[in-house]
Image 1 (cartoon, rainbow, N blue to C red):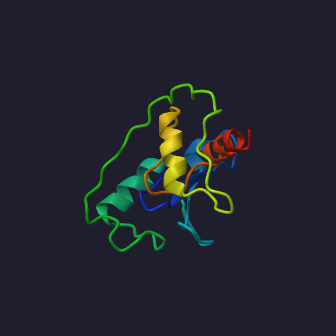
Image 2: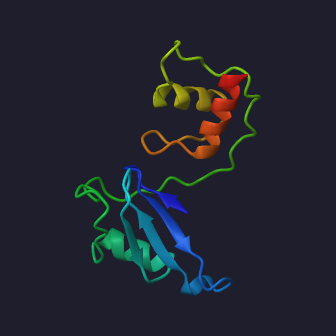
Length: 130
């Protein structure tokens, strides 16, 4: 349900099903296996973390040094046909920046520094192989 600019992903643990006010917030370490769980709702979690009352050990020490800001999500445009992906030179895999450039040119909303979403990678691979 969210991601930091450093690449930590936030999830809802949807148990019990159908009772969202009892769901737990879970955070996954960027590029790592560690997890953190917060036993409260999203508004409580954001208020606690952004006010400094709660520290998420997975977040970098610099997490709040630039202040809190939010980037609202907008519906993604319908991606253009995926038949024009850049081809990396023989024997070389594509650079993440090349994939991001291709994705933006084809209407995908892709983060600047975090993990590239699987759906975008799959679309790029499909376009690259055809």
